[in-house]
Image (cartoon, rainbow, N blue to C red):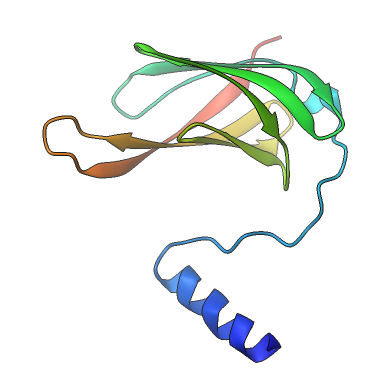
Length: 121
């Protein structure tokens, strides 16, 4: 069975998909996440992510960009969480990578928008 999982994992990586983590949810340090995070996508569209009430591995998050405004409670695992189609990954103290799946309204095609965010003091 382990060999089968290795083959499946290798195939996921070659097509650009990620294999779900087997690590358990564990409490995180709230001060690493809480606050206002801002950045710009390559097309200069700005975004803001506000993270609050981090308790254990749960947090309340607001994502704002253009006309999009999402509120969600999230689960933090492996230094990251998802809010809607957006993934937040903590990369260093006060720095995060943001990946956002965007659907083009005219063509219906999707693409991945990537950016970096910094936490304001």
